[in-house]
Amino acid sequence: MTDAARPASGGGTIVPPDPWDPLVRITHWLVAVAVLVNGLINKPGGTAHVWIGWGVLALLALRLAWGFVGPAEARFRAFPFAPRAAFAHLRQLMRGTPREHRSHNPAGALMAYALWACLAVVTVTGLVMTDAKSPVTIAEEKAAVAAGDWSVLAKDADSHDNDDDDDEEGIGELAEEVHEICANLLLILAALHVAGVAVESRALGRNLVRPMLIGKRHS
Amino acid sequence: MSGFATGRSERRGPVALTLFLLLQATAAIFFVGDALADLIAAPTAPHGIFEGLVALALILGVVIGIWQLRQALARIAAQERALDTARGSLADVIEHQFDQWGLTPAERDVGLLALKGLDVAEIAEIRGAASGTVRAQLTRIYAKAGVSGRAQFAAWFVEDLLQPAGGT
Image 1 (cartoon, chains in turn yellow, blue):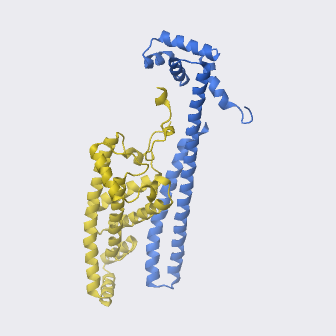
Image 2 (cartoon, one colour; image 1 turned 180 degrees about the vertical axis):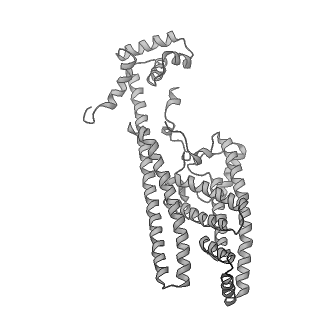
Image 3 (cartoon, rainbow over the protein chains, first blue to last red; image 1 turned 135 degrees about the vertical axis):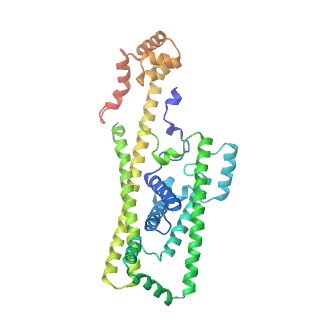
C-alpha cells in the first residue's frame, strides 16, 4: 500500500505525456475531421472542400513548426524517422511486449510522417488543381458564372491559350491523379493508424486515445 | 499548496491560446495566398502591397502566439514538477519520522492510512483486520509519537508546511 501510494512520476518511468500538449491534440483532431469530411462526405472540388483544404494547410504548417519549437515530446527529435526501429517495434508488438517511449513509438512516428507527407501532397496538388485560388475567389467566380457572367471562364481560357496549352493540361491532370491516389492512401493510412493505436493500447494495457483527447484526471 | 487550486484553470489557458493560434494561422494562410496572387498579378499595386503587409503582420502574430504558448506550457511543466517534488519530499519526511518513532511495519501502514484521512472502519477493511486491532495500533502510534489523538497526529506533519519562510 505504501508503494502504491507514492506518486508514479517519482519513479522516472518513460511514458509519453498525458495529456499531450494542446497544439498537438487540437491539430490532430481537426486534421482527422478534415480528412474524413473531405475524403468521404463533401463534394470534391466544392467550395467547402477547398475551404477545408486550406484549413488543413494551416494546421499542417502549424504542427510542423511545432516540431521544431514545441515542447520536447512534440519535437521531431523526440520521434525521428526510423523505419528500422519502426519494424523492430512492430515485432515487439506482435510478441505482445512493446517498449514504452517518451514520445510517439517508432512505428507511430513512421505513421505520423507518412500521414504528413500525404497531407502535404494532397493539399499542394489541390492548390495546383484550383490554380491556388482562395475559396473566396472560387465562390465569387461561381456566383458570377451562375449570374450569367461567363467572362471569368473566358479569361481562364485566354490564359490557357497564352501558355503552353498541353503542358498546363498535362500538369493539371497529373495533379488530379496524384491528388486522388494520395487522398485514398491517406484514408487507408488513417484506418491503419486507428488499428495500430487499438493494438498498442491493448498490449500496453493503457488507453492511448485518452492522452490525445483530454489527458488524465488531476486531483 | 495553491498549486492544487490553480492547476485546472492554468491548464485551460494553453487550450484557449492554441485555439486562437489556429484561428490566426488559418487567417494567415488565406491572406498570404490572396496577397501572393495579387502581388504576382500586379507587383506594384498599392492594394497588393498593403495585403502583403497585413499578411506579414498575421505571420508575426502566429510566431508570437507560438512563443507564448511555448512559455505557458513550460511554466505549467515547471509547476507540476515542483508540486511532485513537494509531494515526494512530504512522503520522505513522513517515512523518516516514522523511523524516528520506531513504528512497526504494520503501524507504518496504519499510520499512513490515518494520515490520508481514512477512519478506523475503513482502515480495518483495507487491512483485513478487526477494527479493535486497528484502534489499538492507532493508540500505540499516538503514544510513540507523543500526540493526544488523530488531529494532533496529522497536525504534526502539516505544522512544518505552515511555518513562515523565516522559521526553521
